[in-house]
Length: 210
View 1: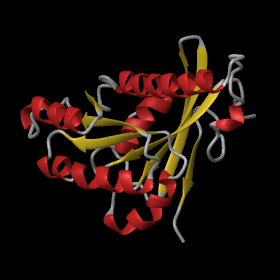
View 2 (view 1 turned 90 degrees about the vertical axis):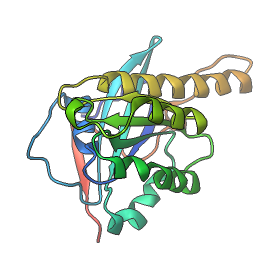
View 3 (view 1 turned 180 degrees about the vertical axis):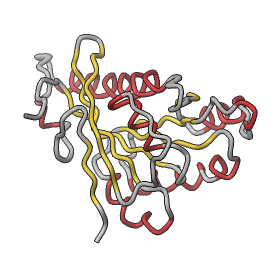
View 4 (view 1 turned 180 degrees about the horizontal axis):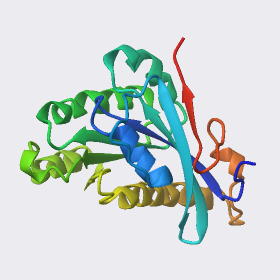
């Protein structure tokens, strides 16, 4: 049976070039696993996990969109309804960081204008191969109104913090709007934030394109 013990359900999308580690990033957060033989995502994967934020149970439904160019037209439809996005690049590969600008434009074109976005520099464990300076990425994030963090799905560095931070930011925005629109301080119904099907915390469902 699916876990229904949550106060809010938030849809989060992972975007970025193929090979930056989005699937491993998701796997580390959802089930604390890392697979060295992981293959490129075809179409869309998603998984979910609940965390406690300020006494509220937040269930994150995270969609891993394929980074290959030929799937972009398909995955763009999955931005709809997302309240958060993790824009991931590989800190050891400059081209994946250069393409962040294009991904951000696509996100702005297809997602809600108020979506919360975090820039994630993954593979921080590859210090000897670093190609993107931390300060440069941080400055880009600040300039574009994004939060920023560097992570490693391999050694789990900051993966938990990344999701904790973005979910907390989303919760603050949603709860603030709820309080402003209601004088009775009643919690919004779970269904109001619900986007897409709900899955068990460790379950993953793959959807392939036709």
